[in-house]
Length: 82
Length: 82
Image (spheres, helix red, strand yellow):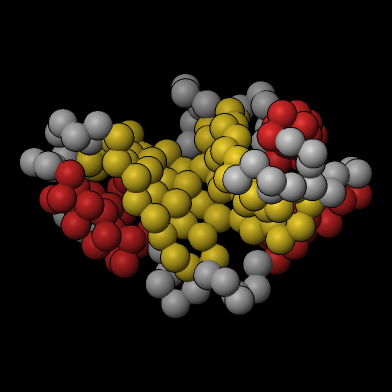
């Protein structure tokens, strides 16, 4: 099952990379605001169904993919067949 | 208008960060394959409509947000009001 995990800095957490992107975009002439940079992790996961996949991916996020103190994550599953 | 840009390493391009994530997830006991790591950039963009926003974001991707030689990008717009 194809999974996409979006990892974002939580609201209120300093995001220097986002600040740098915003400054650079403005220097290039683009009217942007509130820029934030996160990570995108995609993989194939073996699971019997979507519920099992989602439970496993939540454990992956807590153990490795995200820092729950400063980051939030969202899980998207494509296709429901293992 | 809220915009999300997903930047991914192109197919066939070496992705050491994805390989490291995959190895680590497997060591933790998760059955994952084909892991790839990309970036997620989100911001507010001023634009009269979605077409104008999309055109501006494509220029941002080509000039700053992505390396078109080795990365592909996808643009998602939330809400059609500037």
